[in-house]
Image (cartoon, rainbow, N blue to C red; front, side):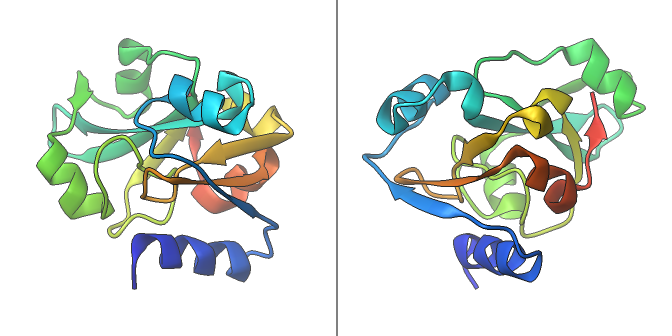
Length: 150
């Protein structure tokens, strides 16, 4: 099963309404927002990080926000977090860096999230490909990701 098919299955299993939007390939949140004609804050940035202790986690935040590295490390119970290597992301998540979805990864990983996303009426995320975005309610992320809020 592809990563996108897995995401569709998770959405269906949880009764989440979604809309698929095809667009030109995008590699950044500003480009995604422009392609979708939405505010960058409505796009999702999912970053795969390594903890100093060797765990791999996902940090999910609005596309217009930056990571507070110390805060994420503290929430993850780590001394430090850093970006995971692209080849490790592909192995664990099932896609390239730049289109990581907030849930549905090939292997389970803890998800840490900026709570403002669940308060956003609708959000857009890449389903493991650069040329599609899925639109779901922000509230659905709570059910789909089971996050720790940062």
